[in-house]
Length: 74
Image (cartoon, rainbow, N blue to C red; front, side, top):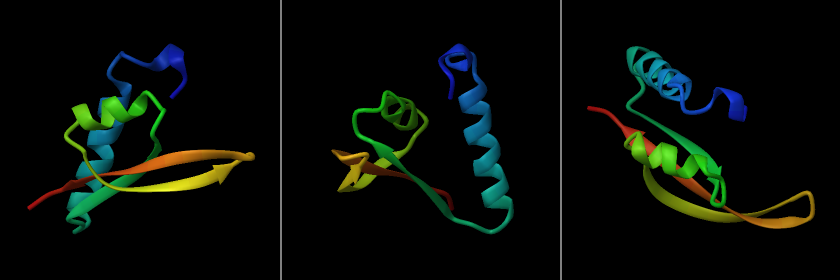
């Protein structure tokens, strides 16, 4: 999300809307791959996400570490 739109609740609203839509469609979980150095990792963890996998990936010639963060519902 563009920095000008961060920290005003839009990310929370978007994540909650996606979560509710997936749940109402019968899904029991969701996940996101996030570059480990991305500040969004803290946001996802704060929103209840749990890291459960890691992989290295080359993007634009740079070796980056990605983390899978997931949520499950009953």
